Image 1 (cartoon, one colour):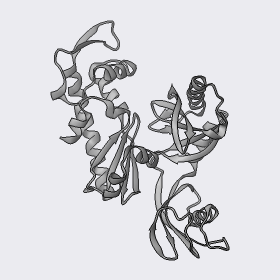
Image 2: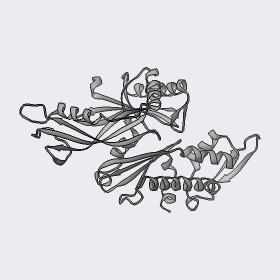
Image 3: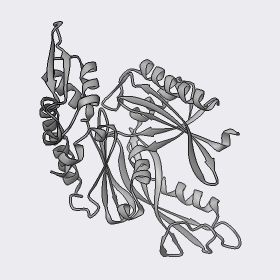
Amino acid sequence: MSNNDIIVSLDIGTSKVRAIIGEVVNGTINIIGVGSAESEGIRKGAIVDIDQTVHSIRSAVDHAERMVGIQISEVYVGISGNHIALQSSHGVVAVSNEDREIGEEDIDRVIQAARVIALPPEREIIGVVPKQYLVDGQEGINDPRGMIGVRLEVEATIITGAKTGIHNLTRVVEKAELKVAGLILMSHAAGQLALSKDEKSVGTILVDIGAGATTIAVFDQGNLVATSTIQIGGEYITNDISIGLHTQLEIAEKIKLKYGCAAVEDSAADQVFKVMRMGSNVEKEFSQVDLANIIEPRVEEIFQLIRGEVHRLGYSHLVGGYVLTGGTVCLPGMLAVGQA
């Protein structure tokens, strides 16, 4: 197995760091290895301690390497956050081949032409996503390779980010002795996996509710048109449980995962558990209903904030509605509260 057949992705989240190894076979990617480690040094999706984050990355990568039996040297790194911005751009080039057949080199050149935009000094281009190509004025072309033409154009979305956020992210990966093959916008990648072609075409809002942050990605007419991040997620639910039950955050997280239910009406009064109270040796008994009464108001607030942000972005009435993803969505009752 050569390294050319292998693609490795790295997702540095608030609760977990994951390394996923994929083997490319006939144009498709088969997942052959997954490494996971607890996130240290990440708060609300941002790096707050480089050394701790490096340790978490190495743990996840080592785990994945042991599973597959190969050494990872290069990774594609997911990026997200409120510093991400989208802007439209247009690129134009003359087709270079003498026979006027459009090739890979022409596509590369027109993408580079689209990258030539005025940017503030504190921002940097993360990627370019083509929306459509035009060949001699003909619109709506997804892949112009092999077509005959004189003039090749592209309408593209330029993804930019804050230099400090980008450099801190690449810094921790490089300190973990890995090469950054490229940065991938998490919300765009998630849309390719979680949404169908029709959902992206008619207009759909993809919401990724993680531990420390919630990312909103709006897809319309087949393209990513807006993205935003709210600094609230599953950790806030855990924090409320910790306060409500007077227990440590670590215990609150375990209780949430084992007994948590987001909807009071779906919770069971006969599902009981005991909790060691903070500052004492006394255990107190609670039911799943007690827990749901703590969780449901916070989940309702998260959904209200999501709806408010989508309204602010100007995409409240898309036909495809909302698609939910992320670890926090696994909490039973989340869908019922979201639909209420």
